[in-house]
Image 1 (cartoon, helix red, strand yellow):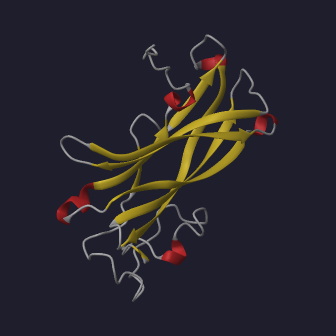
Image 2: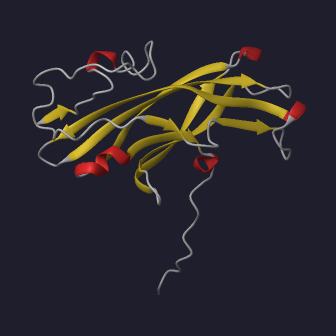
Length: 194
């Protein structure tokens, strides 16, 4: 049986108004009675933070750095949201992380559609941060002339084992742009045996 985590910092109805409504990090509300019967009291839905250095993604003219008049487009993250579901049978937490942002056209001009590389990670923060789960995504954004475009995306394919005790307070969902997500996977160097 799946039950929602005690999301002390948000209620089910306020979860970004369907992941992309009015508020990006809703105000604190009391959990709904019966909503969290099977989830341990210490579990909360971790907050979303934009990874330092990964809040913008700029692309320049071919072979040139993305600076000044050579910028073709730049993407930013404007809003985030999250939702957690605890499965008492597997003791796994399934998450949805919503990201909404904007792509603006630079002086060098941009094509009608662009690819934006995003990463979502579940991290246990601390002196030595530990990545618990992560996934990279490539989002296609349609641009309207010099007006740019808006994108929204919901990552709904990550889950992780429920942390125990005080460790739950150290968990955070990091989001950000990751240009490595656009690069093809490296080929394996293993040779076939004959």
